[in-house]
Every structure is written in structure tokens, then in C-alpha cells.
Length: 245
Image (cartoon, rainbow, N blue to C red):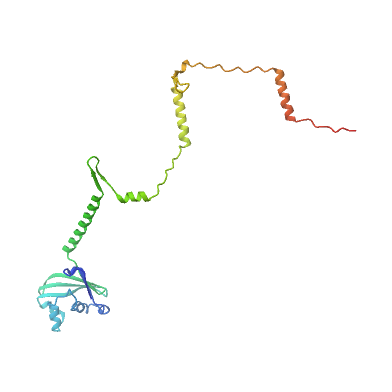
């Protein structure tokens, strides 16, 4: 079973045969990789020649050309197979690596493909950010540039407007202000006073102070009468005696 994402690029495809998964091990993984339906396998390799002539894999060291070897194995989940160009019994040149995870074969990306993918992803993100930022930018000759966010306005419209509670001043603030005003009034008394609204202010020195009324003289006889009336009211009326017949 082969799943193609990008037919022209082997980095975008994967291959798996579920019938081989239970028997995968170090000895059978190369036979699994050499299946005819595997798109990663090259039919012109030396492994195919050795297989057709029924020779062991040790004869690959005596041949020249493309071959596949088992590079790393971690049974039963992970196998790494390398494709290499053999030029002599001691000299080889790696061409590609393939890793098998849970029976699914993938091609390992090369460094250039990794860098290219990361750069394209970064450039796409930066370009998208600039395009979105430019969509919120506004300009007017008289005002200049500013930002206009539609989402923020919609959120503010949907949110209920909470009334701000006006907190009264504290007792300390009120008393402190009164003390400061009183102190300033004593240090700098007013020089002009406006007695009635609309009139011209008059200097304080020209205002005549009215004499206070003298306490009325009370006669001593009236004082005693008032005291007796108060004491009688406090004691209450006298009790009535019963008349005897």
C-alpha cells in the first residue's frame, strides 16, 4: 500500500505492507524493503542481482554500483536502511537514508530540503503577518497613519458597558482639606465681603458690627415664682384624702 502526497517528490510519500509487519526483524527487513510495490527500491541495484543469483549479502562488498544496507535496527519498531554507491570494497558514497517506523517506510530528508522547508515556512509566516498588519493600517493626509482594528470594535460593542462607580472622598481627605482651608483662612483673612449677590464687594473694615442685645434683667420675685412652679410640676399634684362621715 503506497500513499502518494507529492508524486514527483519521494519525501512526500510513504509505503507500508501490513502482512510483513508481524515478521519484521534484522534478517527480513531488507526483503521487506525490496518488495516490487515499494517506490523507494531501485530494481537495478546490486541487492537485486545477489537475490536473483541466490547469493549472500556478503558478496555486495565485491561489487560496484548501487546497494542497500541495514544501517541501524531497534527491533521491532525502528529500522534504518541506507542507499549508497559502492566504488570499491572499502569506499562507498551515501545517497539516501530510509527509516521504517512500525512497518511504514519514509525517506529521510536531506539537509537542503530541511533548510528550504524551514525558510519557506518562516517567509510564509512573515508575509502573512505583514499582510494582516497592512489590512489594519489607515492613512489620511490631515491625520497621518493610524491602526483600525475591526475585531476590537466588535468586541467592545458586544460587551456590556459597566458603569463606573464614583467613589466619594475618604474621611481623612475631607478632614484634611477642611483643616487646610481653615488654616489658610486664618493666615490670609478675606479683605472684601459681598453681603448680597449682585452688590459690590465691601472692605471688611467698613462693615459695622451690630451690638449684641443685653440680657434682660429678671426680678428676684419672678425667679422664685418660676422655681416654685418647676418644683410643683416635679412633685405632682397632692393626693386627695378620703372624707369620713
